[in-house]
Image (cartoon, rainbow, N blue to C red; front, side, top):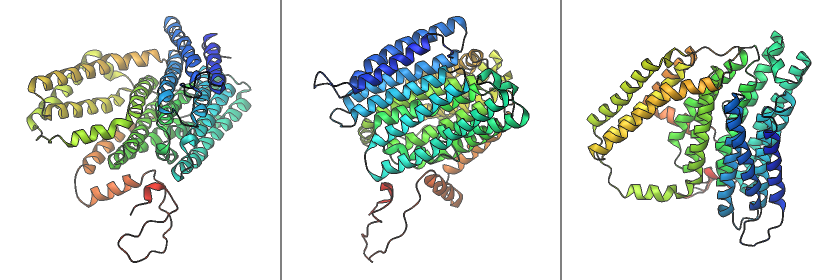
Length: 494
């Protein structure tokens, strides 16, 4: 049974046609093998767009329709990019077929109205993504990425299937609508198992080790992985929101909070472009899990869509990051303006406060999450104000940022919550988010200071999610003895 009437099967059928098209022989040598998949995938994107329009008109599962369109549209965009990026790569056909198959799994999970079909689509997406990660080559980094992702993701899938078994045995029904009738014990078990599945997919603590290891895979796979695949935890938690137990939301919220804080610090320690993007994704997924744990599914939906679009563009543009960095180094660093920083931050701060007061959004149960977006905007305003741009340019940029901040706080946030009218049966308390905000702010200040505490924090964040050091090998007493030949590439230093 599917949520989006006949449009969901049509979308899935078009994606299956994309899988078949990827395996067909090319009629023209100028085309990348497998790139024919992009055409039926584009048809799937059109159908998904119509599905979203229908959902908006009927006010029926808007969140699911939006996520389905996001998955399919990102698949089309990344496949179009890969048709050039993977030209000459012998693994290109596998990429197009597996990326289409992963979209089939994700779309099936999104459209499913019963726990069995949802889990089947979920696992299809997992297996397809593990296979995609393995297309990164035969090097040690890829082997580590495949082994870590296989263990963590299949552990999460096993937890989800165990939750399905418990739910069906307890309620006697496979329908998602029956989850609200679970007894106390079964609800607690299902809640925890679903939380484990969501945490594993999001690459969050304590199953966080697989996501940093995937930095070695190809750029198109990274874009699909970080822009779409990891966001699926929000959908799973949304579908299981009716489970009457607070245990799962607490697990999700705490795991997300820890990941958000530590991964943000780890991002500051990474010198490589993709490494920073990976840790940024982990931190963003931590916030997404925290929002879901608090029952703020509208915030999670907007965050997932925004993060997917932004992170896809960053990964697809990662190849030019070195060139931009070299150009930046050739420019003299100006002295920041303290007065401009204070004015820029104050303008955004006061504008946000006025928007919250005028809109009444602050009375919403999930309004505490706005602290994170508001604080980020204030910091951005301070940096713009402190820059060396002309005063008129800085004023225009700060004004635009203040307007966008006010629009998010007063319009986007209430609208997102209204479009996702799902009330969690037992969310975590809002005070948890306040504590997380305070800890995050304090750790950020320590990280930017100097001293023993900052050094220890840096060392902890630097090691977060990294493979363990290889065992010590006998060394010759010379100043240029290489590290052991085995183990991850990042430890092979002279």
